[in-house]
Every structure is written in structure tokens, then in C-alpha cells.
Amino acid sequence: MTQLVNSSKRFLVLGGSGKTGRRVVKQLRQKGEEVCGVSRTTTPVFHWHDNTHSWQQLLNGLDSVYVTYQPDLAIPRAADDIARLVIAARQAGVSHMVLLSGRGEKGAEEAEQVVADSGLHYHILRASWFYQNFSEGFLRDMIEAGEVALPCGDTPEPFIDAGDIAAAAVRCLTDPDIAAGLYEVTGPHLLTFKQCIGQIGAITGQPLSFADLSVDAMVDALTSAGFERDMVWLMGHLFSEVLDGRNSHTTDTLEKLLGRAPVSFSEYANRAFAASSAEATFSKLSQIEEGAGQ
Image (cartoon, rainbow, N blue to C red):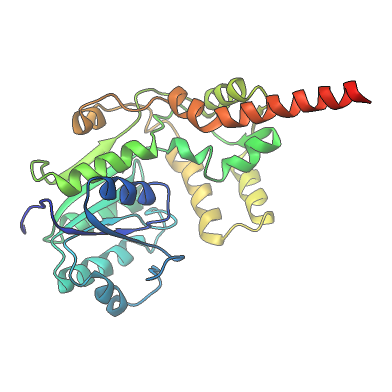
């Protein structure tokens, strides 16, 4: 195994525009670290379809890399892409890799093993579903429309805050005392999708309902809405195989890594949706005032 990380190193974040990636970039910069976040929309650009030579050029001169795979490590080709990245990283002289992974995903476990066998100093963060999928992901449009329709509405999941994942990643990237290995991180409580939607509705004060949907119906709806094929496959896979209760338990790993309690769903939801509640109240007041003036 190669040398441990330390401060004053140069960091690269793959997926630097994503939910955890941009938070990792921000937190590293707040610590005064030199970091570059790259994605399909940045300059320089990073794309998983690119050849390893272009990756090696991007990785040259860097010490540590935080890796998020798009759309998800469960995708069948993910392990091969991670293997190509490992080769490019070793050739470029990178010594340390932190991989974001997902709980209960066989494909993700294959990619994890590639990193574990790479010879690099490594950390793997195997995380549960992000809170931010409700406010920054595919669920946001449904919430704004007033109805969320999903399978597995009653399956408990230990949802987790993307900011907490980023904080754990930054700790792994910068603290040489964090031992290499796999860290399974979750939020502090088990909640169902229905319970989450109920909390969000209570905060916004707007009509918001949950409807149970079959996996096939969800796949058809996503396809009709024009989602990319990989994303449609992924959602079908996650809701049919991963969200079956196998992940319905919490861990204390995040608290040990951060030295504090993880952010709760209620804390996140109040932060993410309180503005929506205030806007709705202002809109109602405006309508009342306009009506009174007519």
C-alpha cells in the first residue's frame, strides 16, 4: 500500500458538480486545500466515456482523488470504468482514492473490490440514499407538482445528508489517522418515503400526497418522460432489488468519523423546504391583498 494522505496535497474531485462532489470541493477549499472539481460540464471536462490517456493527463501532478460515478456504480459497466480509472491514476502518480459507493448494490461491490485491490491508499464510503434526492434530484418535480408516486413507499431507509457524506470524504482525504478501508455510512434514523413526504408536506404547508406505484409503471413513466436509458435501468434496479429492506438498519460510522451526530431528516427538510413554505405564504397573502383591492 502506498503512502498515507496528509495536508498540503492536491486534490481532484470527479463529479465536482454533483450532490456530494461540489460539497467536497467547497469543504476542501474552506480548509485551504488546493482542489479541482471536474465533471461533464466543467473546464477541464471529465467524462466516463473518455479514454484513459485523457484521464491520465487530468490526474498528472495530483495526490488524491474523490470519485463519484455517474449515474451509479450499480450500472453494469461501472467496475470496468473504475478499473480504467485506477490504471490511469497509478500511471499519473496518484497515491490515494476515496470512492463513493452505494449500500446493497452488487455492481457497486465489484467496483469497490477494484479499488481495494488497486494498491492505492483508499477509502470507500458506502452510503445510503441522499436526503438531497428530494430537493435536488428527480423527486423535486414531483414534490412541486403535489404528488410523489414511487414503489417501496413503506420500506424503511436510513437516508443521509450529502453534506455529511462530503464531510466524511474530506476527513478521509485529509486526515492520515483515518485507516484505509470500507466505511458504511447512514443517517441517524430509519424513515420510509411516505414519512419523508409527510414531513416535507408539513413544512411547506402545501398539498402533497404519496401514491404507491409498481416498478414497471415507474419505468414506463420515466421512459415516457425522456430520462436517459441508464437512469431508467438504474431506477428499476434500485427499486426492485435494493430497496427491499436489506438496507433497513443504521450505523454509527458517520458519527465516529465526524465526531458529531449526523444531520437528521427534519433538520435537512426544514433547511431545504422552509423557503418554499415562506414563498407559498407570501403568495397567499398577495392573493388576499389583491382580492381585497378589487
